[in-house]
Structures are given as structure tokens and as C-alpha cells.
Length: 249
Image 1 (spheres, rainbow, N blue to C red):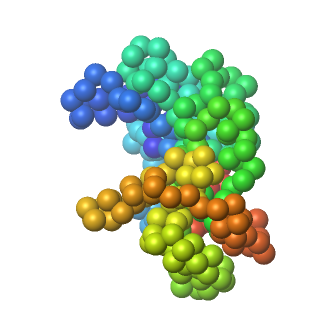
Image 2: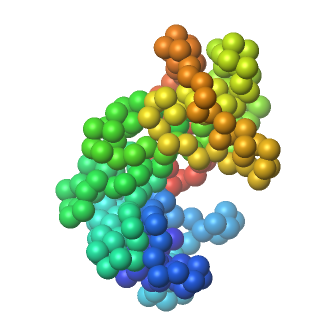
């Protein structure tokens, strides 16, 4: 919601106030551009119904094309750079950025690289080229939805060949190593040099998810799990934000 220099600074100050701290460890640009629809899917927001100049929805207006979005993104990053220099954050990062987004941002950035690019990544949607690019640039890749995303319908899972937690290579590695399928998938991402952020509210699951440092998948197991993406069309393995217009920025 808060893209652009002034809006981003306002957002950070509000967050610091709410948290009761002077700085955060990391400030992340969650999307490479502003929302084109309100979070209320029944209402489309445009400049005509933006409440005021400082309305965070002001930039969700018609005419905000690719070039304008890139400029706005650069202004947001400039605010993040200044916040870093002022000690308001110890690192700055991005999320859901493609190679194109990163390359465009790099042209105007004065602080590079971002500390992290947080992206969806799992065997059905490995994003190999993006991960290779980030690692060459010195950007840590943080994989979310490492077990599969929240938008996977029954029809979608069937089209892909079944749920990742129930796939043959995952179950085979699970049996050999005496680890759960979830631990196998998390370890797969970890061995690809990705940080991982599994989501759970269950204390037992939290412990299970963290218990992945006492074993290693073999080269053959890594390859077998990676091969789950074979035959999956470009982008078809995406399981998060599949219907979200923001993914097109």
C-alpha cells in the first residue's frame, strides 16, 4: 500500500511507533509495486475515489504503467536506503521480485544488493533462474511456501500430480531417513542454499520444522524431488497469489 518515498517513510515511522522500537532488523518491500485493487475485492480503487493526496491508494490509479511502476519502486527503495543510512533499519530487502524487477531496480540503487529476496519456491515452482541470479548478486533467497502454497485447490494439485507431501520421491526419502515428508521438503530447499520460512502455529510442528540439520538428502534424492517440476508449464506450478493481479507487475 505504501509505495513511493514519502509514503514509505511514513509507513516505517508508523511501524516503529507501533512496535515501540527505534529500528528494525530488516525492512522489506513486500511487492514490486502498489495494489491495483483494494483488499476488499468488491471495490476497485482509482484516483477518482482516493480520499486525499496522502491516501495510500492514490497510486492505484489508471495510467500507472510499467515505467511509472518502476519509477515508484525506485522511490520506495530510495526511502529504504535513507532509512538504512539513518539507522532506522539494519538491512533492507525485497519480496516477490523477479529478475526483471531486480535488474531495473539495480539501475538506480545506491545500496546494492538487497539483503534478501523472499519468493515462493518449492519442487513444483523451483524458480531456478531467479535463485541463480540472486545468489550471483549476493542476495539471500528466502523461500516461502516450501511445502506448497495456500492457493492449491484439489483440481490444481491433481493437475500437478498430487500434493508435494504425498509425492513418491518425498515419501521414499522420508522412509529412508526416518524423517517426516515436511522435513524432507524443507531440507530440499535448505540444500539449495535457500533460507526457509515454514508457517505454523503448532509448537510441535515448529519443533519438527526446525529439526532438519541432522541429516542430508543424497544427490539422487535432490534430483528426484527436483524432477517433480518436469512437465509443469512455465508458471503453472505457482501455488501462491495465483489470482492476485499484483503478480503481473
